[in-house]
Image (cartoon, rainbow, N blue to C red; front, side):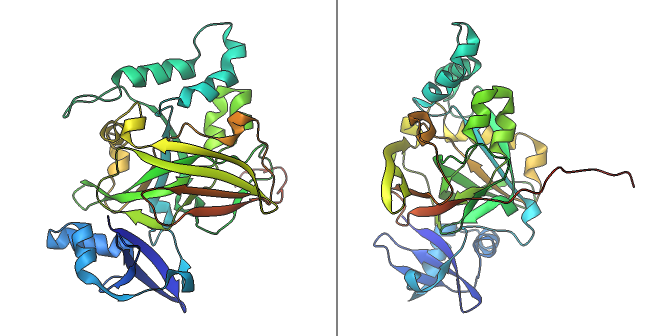
Length: 324
């Protein structure tokens, strides 16, 4: 499988194709993923095929600065969103959070999960049950591999969520084009979410990280990975995770339909980063992260792991609004 990697070397941007053997080669004629995608569409060819044709000199990825796998000249034209309760076992931790308030009844989280389990994988050409959906921000919230994941001063938690994200570009005619997939850390405030499920929206308005690779083609049905947290150089917590449709209650096509069915999300020229969910998080195991902790996420279909250090921003005080 071919991956694309955006990089910077000596202040100059470049694009590389990473082949099945892990060799990176510079892609000629394009400096960015989006530029190559525009050229592939104009030529009527697949993105992976064009990247392979243009691959030339070898690039030492250890000697360059790795960037996000996709970006836009105007970050406001990037929408970052996600879906939850989409994976087998994903309701367990969430259900524990809210059970005390449910007086023995099935929580909304469990009901949402069961709805997806029953109707999240419809027949081709049909729409299944809609998933839980949330908004995270625009392109300014995305952190590349190696960058800090900074939580706000008012955050009560900065917790990792190892996921795969779909990367999309909207063509001039409004067609939704999937460019590929990236390894991600969706990153949320689980303490706020636990206090009241209606604060889920607040818990998601945080940064998110993407690995450097854009995996082209189709995502394997069974993706296996490992998520770990290091503190002071030692492993504090480590756990395997599984994703891909074989481990999900929803098909990717169903998640994509229920996101892009809204015309607002089919605005020509825009880029979308959509996280597909996870069933694994250290918070469910009682881990309390601290600034300085390092998140590390790796998966078998991505050659480059995703590492980010947790930080916390300084407070800005009360935000006051004045009449103009």
